[in-house]
Image 1 (cartoon, rainbow, N blue to C red):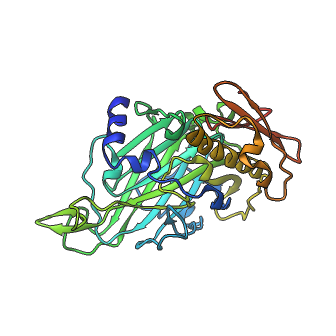
Image 2: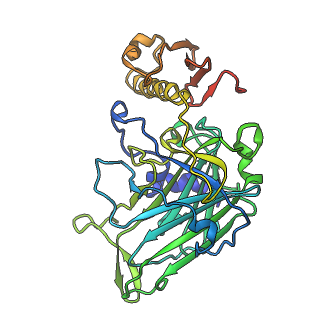
Image 3: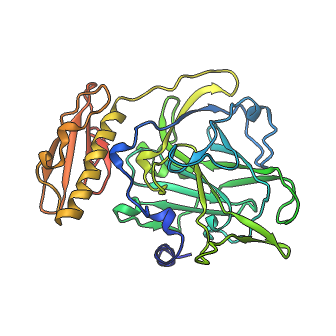
Length: 369
């Protein structure tokens, strides 16, 4: 599928929910509390069949249950979803278990818009700058849609649909019967092996992670309400309007809005040198992330200011920057502006200078711009 067709679909269909937020949440009310997980080493290569019965997988604890994409303001998901992680020198391994009384899937062509089926999704921003990140969606037929985003849709995208995860392995296992309306299924599991030789493209120094590194990652599940009818599953519609009911979006780390393309809201995965079952590593917080979040709030305010006034604010006072805090870190931002954009920076107590631009990209002063 070409980029032009993807963009057309975004404008004309429910792709809007994945590409652009249909609403603007109260960004000031969003807590900075992304979930985090430890990714342990797999002692030997895994067989990717979706069954998750190997000793390495059994030694890895399940994550917290997924929540609604908007967080605690919404009801708990109807069906449970959990994930677990492993890695070795060749692959990033991801497994998920999804309760589901009606396991179905229809799409069989690579790079179909997979979330038109129930699916499982992975989002990865290796360097955490919110630019140059990956999206992968798979359904119960093991059909994949993989793409790279140069920037979030809000900052102009575009999606690179021609990008593929060469060497991707997908396994799925159904507890019940696939595409058999009228019976009761238990759910399905998905198992993924994503090669580092591809994922390193957007990683720092274009290298795979090392033990102790943290990558921004999130996981999502799309769930449609369906009814069995005449040997098939029909998506439910609103009786008053006849329109399809919106899909549910359940995620590992809540976004705070119906928009997966806010990488600053994703969770953290920390890679461990310990093999699965042999270690209990503690997640290490990076104080720089609090500075990044404070700068991101100024970015949100600049977007609102531009909408209201036709251009960016040239003075931090106009953004009420003095009221923004960065956890326990002091926050003293400095802004430089041009006719077309701005850059805001702030120093962390550890000496790192963190920056954000009008296109949303963040980096520290030691990173290439």
